[in-house]
Length: 181
Image (cartoon, rainbow, N blue to C red):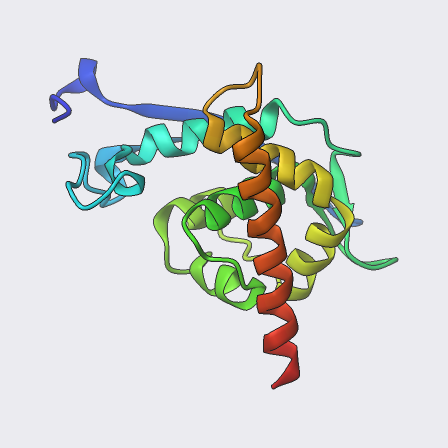
C-alpha cells in the first residue's frame, strides 16, 4: 500500500513531443497515481496486475528510452501529420504488454484506459498509423518490448526477445484478420 500524503505521492514525469505542419507542441506532465482513478494498491490476480500503474509507466519509459529509434517524428503518409515516435512506441509497448495487439483495439483503448490516454495526451492515434508505425519500426519495437519484459535497459534476455517477436507476429495476424472482415 502506498502511504497517502504530499511527501509520499508517486509521480512519473515525462515529455512527449508532437510535431505537425502547423504547430510544434511539447507536452510535459506528471501523472499522479491518486488523481487518475487507478488503484494504488497491487492486485492479487496476477503478475501483470501487481505493478503499480506508475511503476508500469516508468518501465515503459525506461524500455522505450533505452531503445534506439530512427527519428523523433513519424509520418504515416507523405504530407500527413507527424506524431512523436516515442509516444507511439510507448503506446504500443504498453498495449502489447497488456495483451492488446490489434491496432483497432489499441486505438479504442487509448480512449478508455487511463495509462494509454495519458500517453496519447488526448490525441488518439488512428489504427492505420499504429499499423504503419509497427511495420516501419518492427525491430525497435521488438527490442523495446523485450527490454520492458526483461526489466533492464542494460541487457535483454533471449527469452524476452522471442516473446516480443511472437507478440508482434500476433499483432500482424490480428490486424490481417480484422482487415479480412
